[in-house]
Length: 77
Image (cartoon, rainbow, N blue to C red; front, side):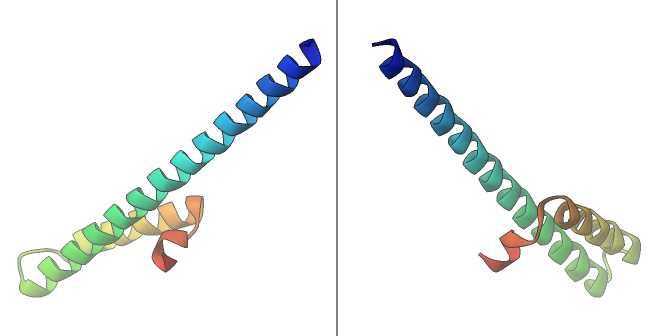
């Protein structure tokens, strides 16, 4: 009986770990999309004359840092 409970506990822990990993991936994907949107807005504002090149560069640097840390999978989805 304890063997069954041990296996059930192990399965549950494995499922929780997989679920947490998926949640993390979704959050990283959303954050990447948000950063990409901010870069687009900064670029648009710069070219309309209401933004600065510095703001655009900062948004680009932030996006590149995210890609370095988490990959660029959100760009392909």
